[in-house]
Length: 406
Image (tube, rainbow, N blue to C red):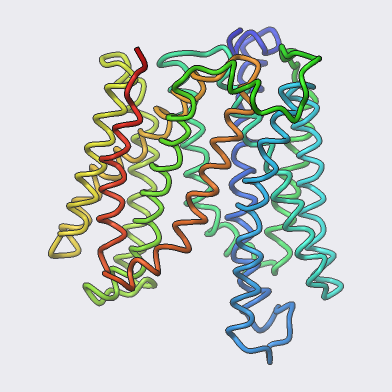
């Protein structure tokens, strides 16, 4: 069953469903990145601070860190469970439930700000994180029935949407907070959740084939139905995200200490902007082109080697401009890796377990970024360039996970 077969008749219905699914994917990431400036203002600011400004800065940072770390932790634990329910009872009703939960999660901080309640703010963040489980469900709908370069193209667009949310989300949230106050980013995300909910109910939904006698809590059954490449593919998701995150986290240490360039300066801002543009263009143009010429495994191996060599070049670059030049092939290969390993993961799972597989990928990504955020500072304290060297080693070693079973 292809994606087009699950859509209403007519080309307009096809594009409506695609728009809805990608909008849900966008919300799953934007709900975190758009609200970051609001949380910064509420915990670290003065004019709109939710906590007493006389509280020591260190304690406010700790509270901010706890709130920001809740999202990946909650998504990591609950997304696979919610996806198992969607595999059993259908994508559309579970996505609708998640969107309602997310909407409540975005509304509660507005009340928290009005009431001056930290507890309501925490609860809202937890609900928003739980509601983001709609993201892997939307990815599962896109993955179901598609194959080969068509699936890689759909997954490339998923990565484009997630990259766009990561790139422009904080800027949007910052502008909304500056103009309308700290509640504005939450209102914007609430509006998007409600729009997605209304769009979701306006499209048709195909039933999901599943065994009604199978326990919803069983993890052994989906594994038994999967191909042997599923766990190695999941390992690829984790390693690639972990290695890319090591660079993303460590660059804030490397630029000031190696070249005395401030993170608030124009070079850093230009580098981050360039990375976002390069990755989006790479995702739009390259995966389908590459897969018409080489196999999925060949593309994966080539991208892993290029990205690994790129990490080494980033580590040894003597000047910031050579560092930026080395970033070009590294960012391109890091971008195209996403649809390749997600496609392999999807192909390794059975048709009825696509939601579960996409949720496992989401959990692996959350775990990778959480661990790298904690470990990067420790590694940089040992040796400034150690995170990049470890990233290169990890990408080279990840080639072992691309071996095909005989």
